[in-house]
Structures are given as structure tokens and as C-alpha cells.
Length: 478
Image (cartoon, rainbow, N blue to C red):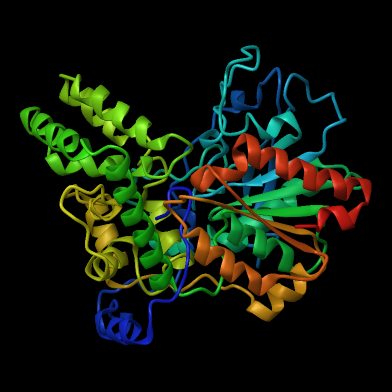
């Protein structure tokens, strides 16, 4: 499930051999298993889409719109769906200001809307109103797209029992996301205008797919792979490295604040007093490595929680930041794109066994194991996916991707202390796609969103600026 990131790596042949015996059983062994390739016309007709308020297009500061695309790109004349986009102005300007280039941001997730980065009701008249795009909009106009099935792009009703795992896996994955971006870019950005793409986290898979698509492709002046998920890496290895990083961050937390164990114990007791499972302290895991000064921010948040006396308010605060993309759409897509052969929950069994935590440590795996545990149809939905994960997302080979990327300027950026992706492993694997005079690598502070930080945004702009000026020797210097 990635929230806004998930990745890949290698743990060793003995571990991988042990996984063969413990990996999810095949559909042939389960008479009632999901038949992923069999989708009936009735199932297509019953996709539970939610209604979108047309007033969402009204904005005094942004250019907003819908682009009609096929639900099934294999049947371009078949059922059409609407993809919602937002063209956001650069800092202290309006969309009439064309001096700043457009940066197309491919969202993380999978299953993320643009509002996760900038709210639809963002206050452009308040100079102090900050969000994930605040630093980047100093240099770019931002074109953001709600991934199909989310936000205002034909959102799926995730509360409907008619929701189909097969439909999600077949029509809402990275290939469709890439083609949707082609359609939006073609419709919104003038043909002769240069633009850039920033593919963040899961959006990295969309970016790789985008550059390998055949046919009419609007080539960017450059693409930023920002803490990007990379194809053809071993998922067990990646998530083991992810857990190793979180283990290291827990240790760093204790080193910086020796009293943190006592604080977490006090919070557990406080949760018990409110009738809330004390293990919900693990929902604070997302603070690990997040932005500069994360250790103090985490300690401060615990103090805030200790003062809450309402169980409802406590639950809301604990969920904040951990569940924005933790939903059924994300669960299916994550299983197909990020953990082929596994799901979020089955992967936690492997990584928890391989890398045990001390009892006081904040543990993402606990939170992942809570998905779907509500006794409703959702639990059956999740269990069915666990028993029989969807087919892996189809991705071009490493050699095909390398060939495609060799014709483009690519900037790989990574965040130190990234609790989602191991920066060291990701950087090493990104070298597979390195091409002389085309590829550049940078590491920043700031965790998973490092390229959105002040330093990250400035570096992205300096790189883009040299490409716009045609000074490629500068753009490709380390």
C-alpha cells in the first residue's frame, strides 16, 4: 500500500527460497478464487462511480477541466470516463503568466488525487498558506491530474459492495494512468510549449510507462523521478529494506530522545483509558524520517495526543496522515504494481519475520495488518485479494526502459531518511537506467518528499533551467 511510496530490492537466495513455500496460493488451488481475467459486460456496467459536482471546475486562480478518455484503451470507441486536471499558477501569479514552465506532477499512491498535495479550496490570497507544492510553485506552474477512480476523475464508490477487484486491477493501473496523462497533456499544454514531468513515488511507475508508450507521445523537456518506484526490482527485498530503514529511524529517535520510550508507554496507557486499542500508537510511524526535525515533531505530537480526552477526537488524530490512500483501490493496485505475488498484509508477515522490532518501536506493519478488519464485506474483499493476488502490472523490460530513457533527460532524486524507500538501494538500482549526458542523480534531506523541499525544488529548477537554455553540459554535471 504505499500511501505515497513503495519500492524494491534483494535479501538473499536463502530468504527468497523460503518465500516460495510461504507465498500466497495460486488461484487454481482455490475453487472460489477471483478469476482476474474474466470480466463480464454486467460487471463493466455496474462499476460504482460516484457523482462529481460540476462546480469543481470553478476556480478564480486555477484552470480546471475534464478530459474524456476510454475506460479501456484497447477499445477507444467504447465507454468513456472523465479525467480531472488542475493547472495551478506559479507563486504570486495567475495562469495568465506564461513565463514559468509547466511541471506535470504524477501523483503517488497508487490511487491519489491532486488534493493530497494542494486542497481544492487552497487560499491563494494568503501568502502563508503552504502545502506540498509551495516550493515548486516558486519556479513552475503545476499541472496535476486526479488518478482515475479518485478525487474528481470518475471516483469509485469505495463504500459500495459492488466494487470489483477485477475491474480495479484491469482498468485502473499504471498503464491507464500513463495514457490518461498523455490525454491531459495533449489537451492542456500547447503543442509547441516545452514542459517537464515530476513522477513521485508510485508515480514513478507511471513515468516509466509514459516514456515507453508507443504512438503520439508529448515528450517532456525533462523528467524528474522523485523518490520513484522503479520497475523490475524484487518486492520482498524492497520492503525488507523499507523495514530496515524504519528500524534505523526508530533507533535514531531513541538516540535523540532517550525519554521517547516512556512517552510512548504513557500514550499507550492513555489510549487504554479512552477505550482505544493501545497498539494504535503505531499509527505515528509515518513521522519517521519525515522532513527535517521529525524527531521533535513526533515528540510534540505525542504531547498533543496525551492532552486529548475525547475518544472520537483521538481516533481522528491518529488516523490523520496514515489513511489518506489506505483504501480498497490502493490495496488492489498496490498488490499488482508494488508487491506482485503478495499483498500489503501478506508482505508484512515476511518482513516482520525477517526484521523484528523491539516492542516500543513504531511499526508500520501493524497498521497495514488492520486493513479491512471491520467484519463487513470489505474484510471479505481484502481476504480474497490476500488469498489470490492480482496479476502483476505489465511493465516493459529493463532494456526497453533503458532504451526509452536514453532519449530523454532524467533527474533521479532521493531523500535521506526516507521511511518508504531505501535511498541507498534505490540509488543503486537507478544506475540501471543511467545514460551518459542524459541522466543525473541527487540526494536531499527531507525524507520521501525531498524534491518538494526548498533545496529539492531549487535543484529541480536549476536543472530544468539549464535544459531550457540548451546548456546540457551544465544540466548533466554532478
